[in-house]
Length: 172
Image (cartoon, rainbow, N blue to C red; front, top):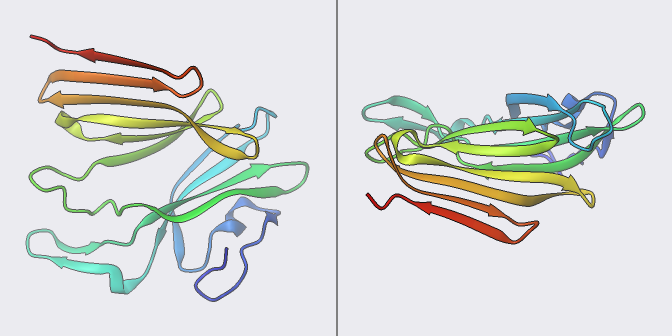
């Protein structure tokens, strides 16, 4: 892709931070092995810095409503390869959550897979599990928990590899 200044994003770089486009900052940096080669890969959750996307909230003051995105750099011999570049796929952390706060995004690497987890406090969570295969990040699993305060109403787990779904419902 191109950045805001029309410059082409490099496909390979000496340093993973070279993939961060102009006009974006690193919001979260995660390191781990995503392609099972025992080399450290990088996942950056990035955030735009456009001043026009700042918003004055009557209760919370000035909020940065720039969206967040993800950049993934895979280490090869001496360089990093750009494996994923999606600059707007996540909402701002300052969205209006209505009567409750907006869901909290957490990214991690677990057993070589990329986990994108949304925590929604007393309302539960939902989580996406991606594996790097076929030169892409494929969704292999989805988990969610629907809660009412401390009580779990329903959990769902989908394995897209085995095409199985497990739902547990609280019938009390």
